Image 1 (cartoon, rainbow, N blue to C red):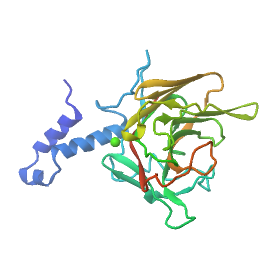
Image 2: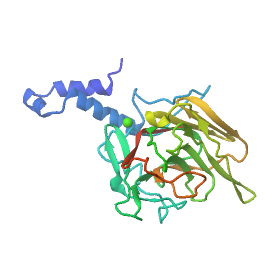
Image 3: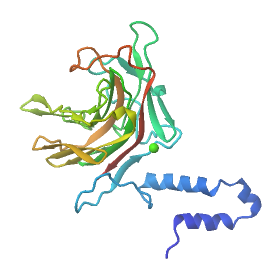
Image 4: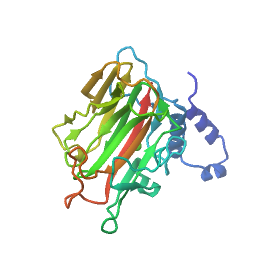
Length: 282
Ligand SMILES: [Ca+2]
């Protein structure tokens, strides 16, 4: 049997004099570092696998961020969209990098209420534009989102060539309907914008715990999953075919936006969108 990299590490460690060993990190620390390196390289035996299986399909991990580092991985993410100004849809927040925190193996996007009347909410966004994009594959996030009217968290795919639409929502929700998730898709037909914003009623309060939200994207096919269970399917030539990057944000809904209410006295601030991981396969 070929010795594993871990075994080689151990041999190297134990062959050192005792005085040097005392200065070295523990085996557990080394193991954690090794797994982090393996994860970055996409190798090793602990590779995550999709929550769904697709027959005869060998999935290859193309992006994984477990958010276990001390800071946002700048090789994968920027703390902003590629466009300016950042605010779209008349949303009530501005995005600031200091609203992002990495702790407990999570990326935590915190949204603060305005400091004065008429002020704006402070929240955060990350985008993989210019760093990671992909056409087709399996995209998955595990997250917990904040309840309350006006909270509007989304994980969405946007064209890397900056020409919108298409747009694929891996996950979208609004805190006034904590049982619902909106697996949305936007496209055009003859220059006219189209959308399929049907929602899925999970029958439970999705904000009470972490859940896994995924989308399978193949030529002419989009399938959405909640905790590995299919919740929506779209087929047809209008399904996107160009590389797209990932945006992940916690917005605050403006008045009159598709019937979504703005925050009221029952919405608790600060609130957090906690992301355990983002994983993509091809
Ligand atoms: Ca994690």
